[in-house]
Image (cartoon, rainbow, N blue to C red; front, side, top):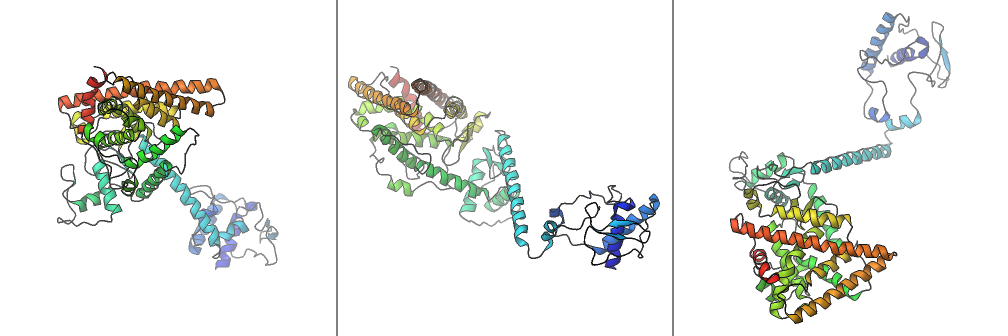
Length: 515
């Protein structure tokens, strides 16, 4: 029977009879062009072939081709090679499996996919296909991140979403909850048999149903692995494993060593967050002993809010300032005044600098907390999130975008940070303090100029870069002033409760720097 079917198909598909594979949807319903990959794993159905042959032969008779299949067709001799000819009963000479045949004999490169021992080719094809799908998924994810609209409700609890976390628009609370459950491998049970309603007011009432809803709306566990790799890479960067710069200037080397300790304290759970300026400046110095803080690095389940992050950055800036020998030579009251005068400007610059370099539309803190540029939220949402969103936008537009555009280097950032802090223009400083701080600033500016002269072969280009960097100071100070004013407004109207250290610095600035 199989031999008969083969003869029927061969006679039908030969071009001399005026027939080829049908293109009409009435015969096959799909294109006759099949790629080798589309045939893999599809066994031949002899019954279907016979039925197809019968259908084709009927159509041929109706078309008047005169080629009605018959079992009397001549069979090719086994000795006849592909490409030779044989003669049918009606006297027509046709090629067997020739290059002009509509039904080609499988070529070796095609037929090898059907061999049981050809697993390697099959695996290569499968891996390639998976890579393509992975690239498509990544592109879709990137497009979704671009289209996120601030103020979108969290798909888990309905609260205001802070971004797309683990592939789902979600709030910081649900993001942290999902991450904690997965990373710590927690299990929960439900007293209501898994039928609890999860919303903003009741999201903490049943952890079982909350996690189940996280999965149901599409939170992806595999995204946690990506996040961990990103954080490890971030730590490598600030450990000097990559992106490091070198300088022969002793002052620059000193600043680079301090920056490593700065970031260690910034990302440590053990770092004290001071509640007042007095405690920040009078507490024992910890900057030169960071071993304890390295062991207590923030994990994937630890997260601060905006208010806490600002206070923590200010606390670390205080520790950084106390590590300078020139700062320790100042009287206590001059230390107090200089810190109030400069801290907010350094806070703004740090928020921008420690945002990953690929972002220019958001501020990202070391634990993943994000503040977006396109935010239009009411006062109630600001209170819930303990954030100053307008000041975040100011940092993005006036500091982050310009320093990304000019591709500010790590050494340039460190020198500018020190130049901002050691500012002799604070009117309440003593005469001796102004002289000490002025000399320190001149030394920092000289180091910056020498660094640029060594980096650029063209002195004009080096001078232009020097001027462009100093112009950044104006924007930083402008944003710092706006942040202080916003803090005062929020405190006046009781829109939220800022951290005491941040509030004290904002409220005392005018008396220290202007009068």
